[in-house]
Image: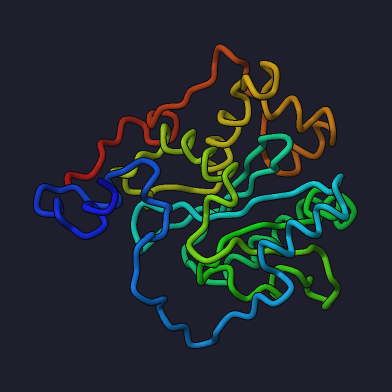
Length: 252
């Protein structure tokens, strides 16, 4: 069914990739050749096999998975970060989908957290080979040229190698369905959305919320620096009304 939709079989009926909750963020799985880029990315030493080798040598190192979520190819875009062992997710709003813009998102987080805490939270970054992430040095080096993290990339067309961030996007899709235009989004609304998502208890965390687990390891001050607040369980809202104020989705 995904293949039919990707090939446009149902397009005249208003069904395309942006109509599906999970498929919207996945790359096409069937293609005769990769799209050529002006500046071919160099993944030497940063491939998924290198990532697995790094983890085998440093098993206690925290990992953050990074991705991009959007409802229109014209934006806006949400750069998402998932702290794997804590299931804690944050997002940075962008108007451009470029390496330069996404690297500024990392700069922003480093400034918000401070150098020491940033290094504790972001020692390893795993992402896909999207064009907005291909300039790895922009993510790895700070403004002074010092190494601030290690970045690795999933194999081509294998975004499933970062399953935690992909699966956690389902919570986002409950609040920002594919049919909703995101042009009214602000960073404050993005932070509010993730505050509710991170306050949602998980069976995988023994009925604790990602917020509770994250704060147990890093303290509430770390969550506050990331503009994430705790929402009481009975007050958690995972519906569009949380940030859209009754706004209706776009008509296909």
